[in-house]
Image 1 (cartoon, rainbow, N blue to C red):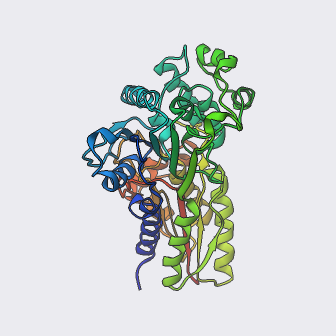
Image 2 (cartoon, helix red, strand yellow):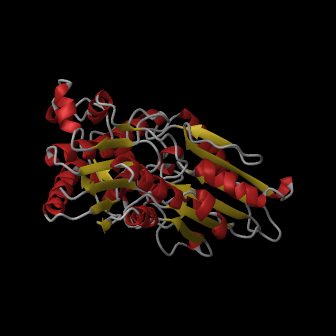
Image 3 (tube, rainbow, N blue to C red):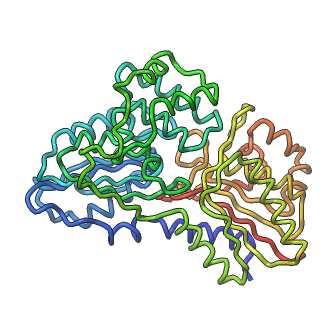
Length: 426
């Protein structure tokens, strides 16, 4: 029988495979236009692999009929023959992303009614496609991004603000490409699979408003640059809405969802003889609070002598109060270990399916962390206080010290946070 850690890694691998472009993209690729060009514009953590797969389908088109550009996170580039792939900053945008986005917008401005614009979208596009609204510098947009990420706001709220400070998000890419037909193929990484939230919805109407963005700033008491505050008051920064003619004839398809990843993981757990409880792919909230809830559930299953796996997805948040390092998955894992308090027979993995969780933006940042019945005892034997690390938001430091960080490297997709708790009978 495989170990719990081997089972957890196998479930994670199954979740990633279910959302990889190699499997989910080819059946959805459109036919090239009869007369015009096929223009591929891609952004996000899966942009390199999505472009690689799409290019293989269209590589025989004449040079005059295939063009485009992809922007992905540093370390997530893939080898291509025709469509350039540029690596840029994430989660905080950088100058490379700014330059690449300008190129993407120029390409969109030059298409005509005979062309087909194929947009390949995945989580991370909000940072990779960076085109600040008039009057906002890159540095001011970076400061805004940092403030949003530290605030504890949900991804939909973060993207509502982003969309109203951009020249490409919130439907504006389709606006720039009009009258060309725009087909978007997206890998969803957000709870609810809402197109207006995935990558900040660059190709779809935006139901949110400037007033919504201002309310989010007020609610989280964000200290933003003055130019950003002014921009959120300017009517010209309102996004195109449902019913706008620029969206007529456009097509949007989600090719992989968080639910697909969790179902694939559940199949591997079932094959190993475990009962599966899927809590859903839309979980949101503070990582430490969700961990407390799931610890209670796991302990309840253990008390009932159940042989089970608890699976969940969704985007958790961390409101930064300390000075440490670590994303929501690592913080969830640390809080879960504390609440389980060394319960025998329980082990877990919390990790981001893109291969990195928070961190410095490097491709070798950890994706998450493992815990088991020995986590707290090993930590205390090493002189570590788990509660102190949690209070300092330093989950990376904690798990690094006991060699329980999970580092799969870039997965070249991005579909959901992955959390699995294995409960064996005591």
